[in-house]
Image (cartoon, rainbow, N blue to C red; front, side, top):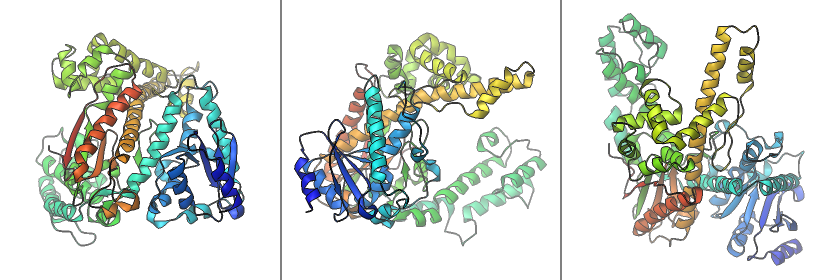
Length: 586
């Protein structure tokens, strides 16, 4: 052990809260670890040129359990997981910079910097963890900036100071939850979602017919294409080409503006049924067919790339693989390993329940008691039927002003005044060009230059009616966005807390009797999160621990609710089930 390592070890007090900042900055651009005390002051640093980073982190996790501060967990964590090293706590500077830079919860947010501008998450190239190592991460350093560690320390200091200036602890909780979400995202990619290739192939054959030759249509699609051609009396029709299909439809006297299934459903014609069936099979074939299976499922695991905070509201996105769009018909292919089980949990009507709680609307919380909030809205007397309740509530959150949703809005305002005042106020702020925030402090983007120009042009003395109409339309669009932002963003925060609580509780469960080797060195013997989609999780667990894992998921939901809405009673029930596969009944 080097002298620096001895000094580092000597001052690490496991009983005291501390952080370790990791970055490049040692000799020849190697890793450097800087130990900070609970005030953020540097205590010691170690050049890791002669030390294996996985071994270093593993030892500190065992003895001290610090919070690891890194530029981006997406860069650092995957190769650690591949080496069998798991991190308990972390602070992702890149994710937290975006929150603290844009929040309206601080009188003086941290300044924007090109060095901390997050790349558009959807443009990040897909790269599987097994294909790179810590050496690759270190080698990717900018040769003109060898002292990244100093930049990380400076940014960390700015973020600490910003959080200390915050009026309460909500932003700190959001940053902690966002960083834990980043840990979970990489862990789920590393562990993978258990996936049966055989079941997937069987489902494809049942739906599409045998796998076609390269460039060919599956037989079921070919049969439907022939039926479509006959119904339109057009042998040249190509249902895979929207422009050509649109021309064929119009030649047959079917007046439509697009070939979307929503518009086609309004048409009465023999071609509609086979055409809708064809479009459904075409989506399955293109998005999750044999090509997708070969590219994304290896060793009976689907490993999508999750993007924490990939949507401005804080919702996750995915880069490649379509993790957030697995069709219901393929859910039976999500299948536990032998000796293991799946715990599947969905939240019932999360966003309207969150609206009730964040607005502290007691009447709406009363309607939310039980498994079906919409039936509760009916019981409240606001509407007559469950269908009306669904239209009304969704319209309130998404800003519908016409149709059934718009007509039912006044009834909701009379019965649930606090909830409606919250979303109406958020809409008004957006229409006026203002910024709104979630419960924990994530703020909406400011209006872009085009929006501002449109509003300015409308107020010009020479503006005509078209300028004013366009400006009003853009203002209403922004109001609908901010109306939904506060609800969807706060629901995303509840989900982050739920995930973090699940992770914490699962880590306390014992190891499996039968390993799931394909889940990798960290998770082969431990119950773990395997999938997340907005308000749904799937846990892969040893069969003998399935009941304990299910309890952990339920207890985590209750804890997340208490943490986000202290002192307010709100039901956020789960549809919780233990099964061999993730198939859903219709």
